[in-house]
Image 1 (cartoon, helix red, strand yellow):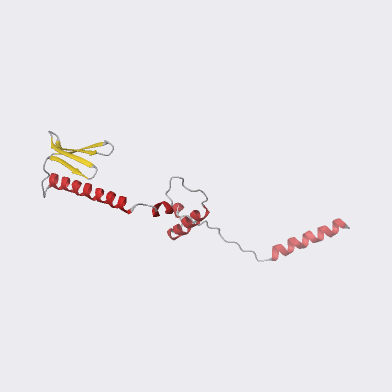
Image 2 (image 1 turned 135 degrees about the vertical axis):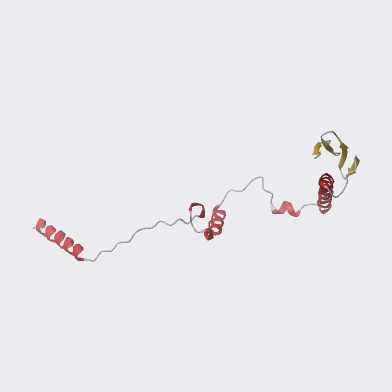
Length: 143
């Protein structure tokens, strides 16, 4: 009796499954990550999600509190030194490639002593940091 009941239930289930209108569709994979062909507008969302989940901190990164404790006079001196060295490099380029002259000689600018000489291969510039004695030599070749 039990076998007959199971057979009837199984046959009924097959009959119902066969009469139902079944439909299917193609599954299409669409990547989300723009690095793998996904939409480029997803990049910012993925980046912010990754940064939000990042629990590791870079030990060499400067904290924002150390930026607040800087000395403004030291910052001014560093900025002034950068501007002077930038102006000197600009003069070198202009003198070598046109619109100006750079006279050979020795110059003292802040903590730097700069010696400009003419050599066989071009203009030689030796920059010496007076505070620690480090030297940098730059040679600008002649054309």
